[in-house]
Length: 96
Image (cartoon, rainbow, N blue to C red):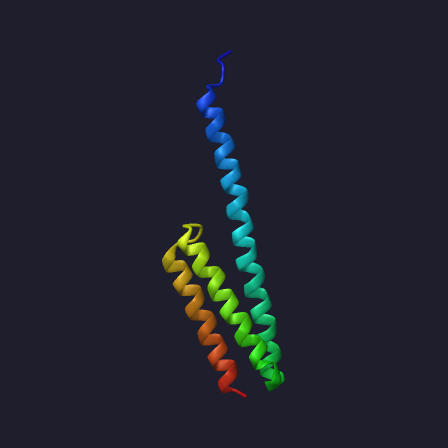
């Protein structure tokens, strides 16, 4: 039976650490997106919630930009997500 090389073991440890770090960032992006969507839907019914939705949008955009800068999500995917959420927020705000 062949022995594992120490470099392969180290590479595996590194990839596992990166995977967990990336998973954390992706999760925070998804959480902030869901939070924004809930607040945006509330602001559609209650105009006083609009400020909260706008703050959540800014927070979500910041997290998406950070993930794209770190290479966790593709920069074009980040731009697409931000654009769609901004358009959604604008339509909800216009409907008030």
